[in-house]
Image (cartoon, rainbow, N blue to C red):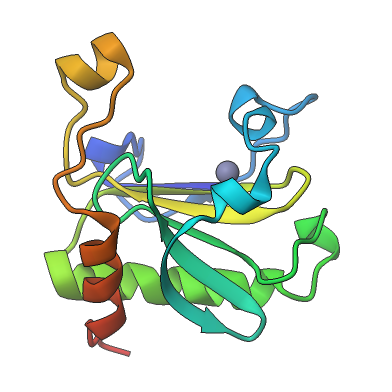
Length: 156
Ligand SMILES: [Zn+2]
């Protein structure tokens, strides 16, 4: 499952929509996430209904958020926590909009060994250092991003 919101985030249609893409094998991005402890290291934003949201310490872009069951689970489609996780994702998008205004973003589900959602707002454009060296320059530290998202008052 993936979501592209806004042309700057690669959306191909002007209206909000989600896509389901099934891959025959685990994609490289999931293969590289074998260590759940490291993957969920970050500044805690919220915890609700057995689901946690963190801004990773190595966030690639401002306000990157990962959402996962507090106790790791292998399969999102079999989990009672998928719906609460998606509700939390929607709330975090509203909180992001309260902080930064309507923003292009991507979100996706990784259904690997420990399923999780990732939210990647596209408030910065990857430039030479990101594309040429693979080094991400993030101008909003995850501690500040988490604090801003925590204190945001989204319209309900
Ligand atoms: Zn992931």
